[in-house]
Image (tube, rainbow, N blue to C red; front, side, top):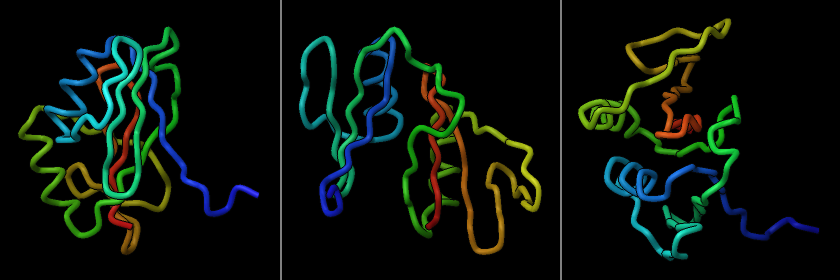
Length: 125
């Protein structure tokens, strides 16, 4: 029924101006649609992300969004670290950590948080 339909990610934030500095300034996303004081829309590749104002921002304790970055993951981790992004390290059985990268066989991932504590991840998949 929904197969083939576009999926759009959504992230709740407390302050859109602070979120915009992070998503646009730090991560390099470009605002596609500025919906005023309640939401912004970004496009990344063929996907969209809506960042909207909510009192429940940052309450999710699981990964909210994955960026599939391919072989650029090592360079992107380094570049984001240089922009002040702190990476998260989680205790997971069967994985190794190489600096801020979790490595499990050919899979690599790096987690970080936005200013509201939403957990974001980059994956080489």
